[in-house]
Image (cartoon, rainbow, N blue to C red; front, side, top):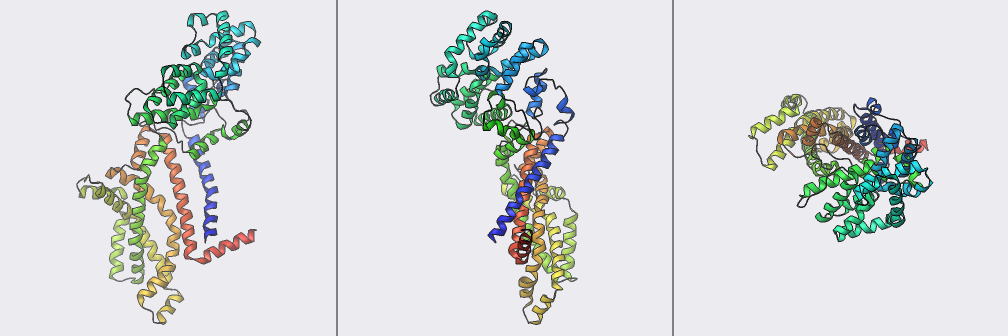
Length: 521
């Protein structure tokens, strides 16, 4: 039985892969996600990360529209972007002006690939590059704008700067500096990290996720904002909710822009052929649980999903338990006493429940209790409203399955042996009639999930459904994609559990599947 369960679980993997492909195509082809939107505002330099309109460029980047769908034969990193900027500055013209802005945005992360090459550039290009780095010097708090606006003095300044500071621009040195800043923060240590500008971003963003010290987070977010010119810097006395939002915002931004500020070397570059694509980013986000930031309140989607999913799962689990606990005996007895008073009465009641929409049942129960604010009461009524419709459907399924079984020869044989009616019903008839019901159990979960969204809204339960309705109003695609993905995983696992339960009840199912595997082998 264990081997059978493992085999069914493994078969869920290709199902999830196929589901991820479908979801990826749906989200990437949706309006505003690709197609025409991908080409609007595109420029010849857009693929290298600097175009004519920074706002359009950033909007495309956030949706990974600057990346190919499945295979990236030339993944861009800080090294390639810096060298492309140097080449465009040398060529001059409109592309040169855009490259000057791009080089300033790359900041200190580009220093190891730009400053050592200054002496190799033609004099006029060398001067333009040195002057283009003046905004970086202002952010880092070094040099004077007047001096750095003159090509000759700017060249001399950056040459000496690199001679004195090149050893500071190593990952080990930055890691130690950020670690000391987090443990024993001081203005002097903060200034030392600020000089490195965007080169220190990997360690800064990583430290944000590893600490919950308010003082350290204030310094880290301030450094990140200073070097990038975006995002929020935490102020003294910020609340825990503000910490979470700020850290989630920076982690989301870094997920999108990491390769703009770090190089891809060796194996990383080989892997980037697949990971630096739209589908690769989509899979990485789903695998790591970094599902983005909600536009409704700025909270992490993954955090909100973890907080709200237990409520929805509890409502669905209780509704499934209640509906099955009632539907199975009612359907079985209705079939056993076909045409009698019990069968007729239950059929009428079940027909009424079946024709009553879930939202109507929820609203009636909500008004019946007068909008009670007691959590337990609201939960019980939500379960009752959600299980009402599925109870009617399940009971009719069970009745039909039971009617087929009671006409079988083995049931008549059990009667002929003199077994009690209850033993015939429960031990012989019901066990066999449950098999088709178990098969349908996996299809029951999607229905409950859809109904749960409605009852959570009616009773004000803080579950996924209530948040999803808010996300629909706000066009929060990050949350909607996360919910669909989580629902797909839950439904796939439910179908696997249904198959395993069916195999446990009927050994013939396992034997047939085992024979198929042997034949194929």
